[in-house]
Structures are given as C-alpha cells and as structure tokens.
Length: 73
Image (tube, rainbow, N blue to C red; front, side, top):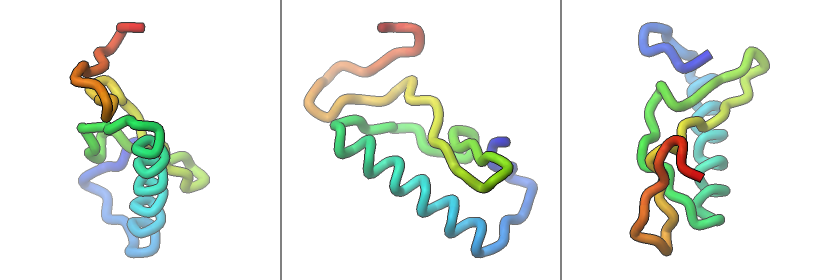
C-alpha cells in the first residue's frame, strides 16, 4: 500500500520507513540516479513493513542532462 496521508503512523513506523527510503535513495545516488519526485505516493510499504521507492519516471542520471521518460528504453 502507498503511504496514506490520512493514516497516522507511529514514530517508530515513520522512522523505519524514512530510514529505508534514505537507504534506497543513497543506493540510487551511488549509481548516479536522482529520483526527483519523492513523495508519499511514490513510496510503497508492504504488509511486512518493507518500503519500496517507486516511479523513477522523471529520474535523472547525474552525469547526463537528459531525463528519463516513462515508456522510453
């Protein structure tokens, strides 16, 4: 499920999700990719609490001036 703006997370849940998102972004940045659209709608949290960063549709490669586009290989 995506993060629901109307559902209150506990401090522990919010910190756990935030830490996972930070690790995912660190990994992407380490590979030269900048997400550019982090928001609750782009974070999926599985029932077991695992957070996944989604929708890299407007991501940018750090060493490129080109942007990725949805549906482009």
